[in-house]
Image (cartoon, rainbow, N blue to C red):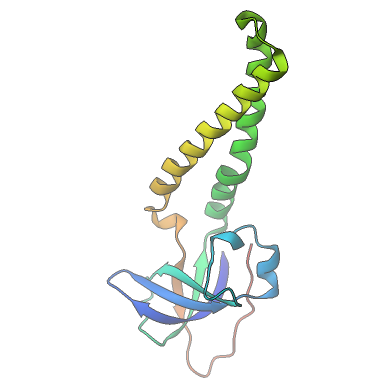
Length: 154
């Protein structure tokens, strides 16, 4: 599980918005684009499930399941590339039957399947966003005298 430390800045019935500071590990993080930066600086605001019962002003540790992160990363980055390759191959094979230029048909089929993959990712992403396993969680409330934990980001 990947963890990050921050301070709760607001809450509602189920969620806590946690202000964190980007660390050096975040630079190599594959999900760094999904984090909301506040004012373009080093501070980020992360919406997390408030499973630990944190209150405003609490110092907390938030976590994200690594397996879910890898599945989401595959869906976002690898799936469109596979769609492009399959579309180009299908276009190449279909061109003689359609009496079209094989290169142009490959391009058209490839981009069409990439477009369809983006639509699929949008629908699937909205569905996954409602599942708890794909959302960060407040896993622990830190005591005021506790030293900061090492931050890591996958």
